Image (cartoon, rainbow, N blue to C red; front, top):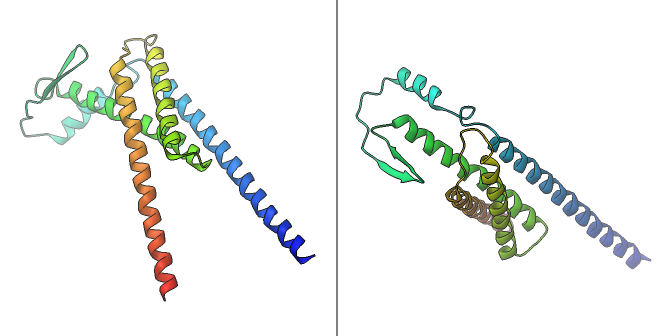
Length: 192
């Protein structure tokens, strides 16, 4: 009788873990869908709606920058960016590409974390996260073709994939650090 009761309690714990994992995965899926909708809503905005140059002009006038900017130049697509000649275009470009990196890093972390939560293998989780980033980024660039004054570029898909890789790497590194800290605390507690 005691053995049966212990077995029932054990199976109850297993069921609770399974339910918790299922709900956790469903929450992860919901967050992924919401994040994708945020990405796609930004894709439908015109470049004027996303323009930060008026804000940059106001901000730079308040600061009274009294130094000469270095002559940093590069070409992205068909457009040449120059920090010295067109600093606002340069700053906006850096801001936009940083936003690409961040937004897709978050998407990759959400997918990767959801997959790992389901105890999917590390390689499968990484490949799945990057595949989702690639598909969503490609659709994002396709949507941008239909937005006023926006251009779509396969280069941006590469930037988005880089963001996904960075997001997964940072997330995995943070998880590893947290595990080490917890392990160190457990070891010190047990040794006392």
